[in-house]
Image (cartoon, rainbow, N blue to C red; front, side):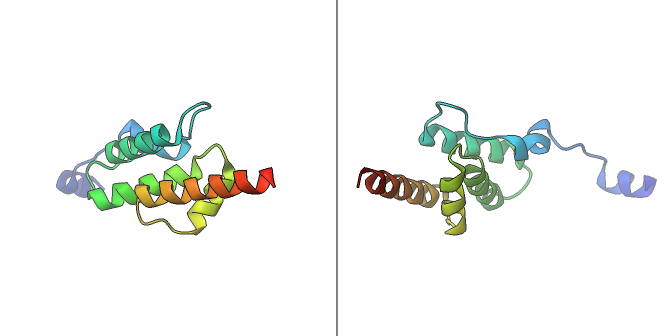
Length: 103
């Protein structure tokens, strides 16, 4: 173990990476603000990895961290390819839900 640490270095995960899984949309936080925060948190937490991985994790966290869990599940199951795609799918879901509730 000592030789591995000497060769590769013992590195602690940043606090942001350790707690990334517990972040969620705050009460009163808009979808735009939550998506921006998810992207910021992911790029900070995974700064040593390629950006595509951080963006993928941000999209997943955006969906899983939504206050509206049903909407998050619906959007997540559609496998959005980017944050823009996830936001678009979320807005469509919200529009359809509102239209159906009014009928």
